[in-house]
Image (cartoon, rainbow, N blue to C red):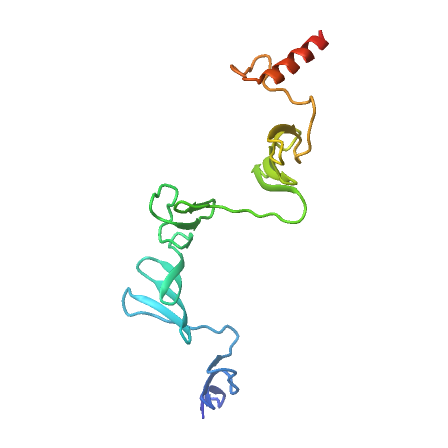
Length: 219
C-alpha cells in the first residue's frame, strides 16, 4: 500500500508490515528516507518526551524533560546518566556539585573539571600497562610541571626537570632521590637551601654517623 503526493511520488509505503516514509522499500518496521530525516516529538505542556527501547526484559530509556532542560538515559526503567540544562554530564547522580557531598555518589563531568564522589571506596583508578613511565601528568598552560609514575614496582613523584622522589618498596623500604622518569640520582638533590632550611631532620644513628663521616671527608 502506498500513499502518494499530488505529483505521484510515494510519500509513505506500507509493505509486509513495515512502514516506509520517503521510500517504497522500508528496511525495518519504520524506515525514513530524505535529505535531512527528522523525527519530531512534542508534548502539549511541560511534560516528558520519552523513547523506550525494549528487548525482552532489557530496556533502554531516553527521556527529555522540558521543564528542567535535561536529557536522561536509563536502563531497566532506572536513570543511569543525564545531561543537565547546563551541559554537565552526570553519571550515577542527579547533582552537579559532588565536591561538597557526604552522602551522594557519582561522577559529574563539567566543561572545565571533573568531580567524583564515592562512599568508603576508591574514587579514581588510573591503570598504565606495558612500559614504565608517567601515569598522571600535571600541566600549567599546556606544559608539564609535575607527574606521578612508576619505575618497575616503584612509585615516583617528580617535576618535569630532574627533581623527584622514588618510593622504593621492593623489600628495601627507601625513599630515594630520582629524576623526572624515576631514575635514581646520587648526591645531586639538596634538601633545602641556605635561605630556605628545614627546621628538624631526624636521622638514625647509622645515618648520622655516615653523614658526619662525609662531612669530615669534605673538610
